[in-house]
Image 1: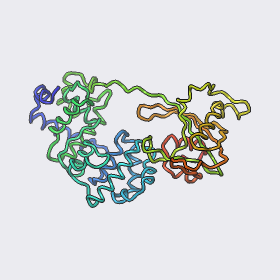
Image 2 (image 1 turned 90 degrees about the vertical axis):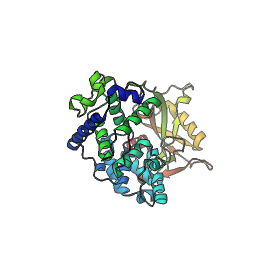
Image 3 (image 1 turned 120 degrees about the vertical axis):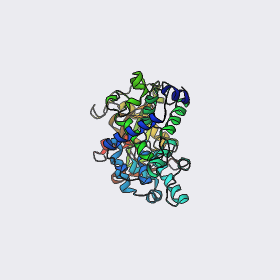
Image 4 (image 1 turned 180 degrees about the horizontal axis):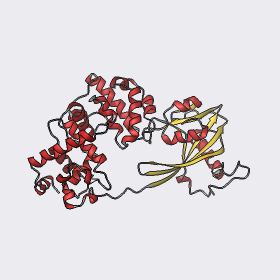
Length: 391
């Protein structure tokens, strides 16, 4: 439905708009959560929080936000930090490109803007990792610029207010929502207004079973009028999950463990990980995986013993290492985007060092280094089960 048709249908007028803004503000002032990034209008703090909150819940972000600001209290400190230091502090939040973009954007703010954040959404959106929503959030929350915002919570609120039955993620849906958001946002205290919209979507106008009886703007909501709030936003078809099977190898030599740095075209780019072997492509081989090999340790330790020769061969092929796999350590599953990975963790020993000319960054880490280096969450989980001490 084009936005002007929605205006006509709902008879949105100045009285409706005034009532909506007034009721929303009153509710927010009574119900706003005391979140740490709301304690000041510092654009640096707001920027960090908005990037962290992408794809991550408020409850998960709070401890990371405090820890990140303790380590990088201002944009200058972040700009001068190494990528490894930033990734280490970000470890556990996932979507690590966010951390790399934070550092790159901080360097631009320091080098091109003297450490002062621009207050224009059109300028902010040019910084790495800052899209239209984040630019509007920083501009309105930090500088009180009347900038519109559209993210998951507010998109849901807008769609229900208009009883919009199209896909909110489609090009038409996004145009409609942004036009509506630009019409809604006031010139007076737009930052508080945008915070109130996000809080309403988070606490009341939830994805399932919205609490319309608690909603301060239910009299303004066309979905409530049509009794269709549970059907909006329209659900899109879920993305098909891809199952993958991988092995992680903890290879020891002289008391140290081999780690490789993830490439720029891989998940967790720039972070350290245990060498991996993709087992899916090897399934065509006639191997009875999951059975105990004669002479191997206890069954519960070696249910995948028939994989040992294959992993030893792959270690020679990929790394030039003469490895003996001697123990199955763990098995667990995790998800990255639409991929569902089953990871098998093995321990082995190497009688030599990695071959000369191996192009991938690598190092032999002792226990202390293993605890301090930035590792993806699955690698840290494997390390914890491997050593019993790295958490």
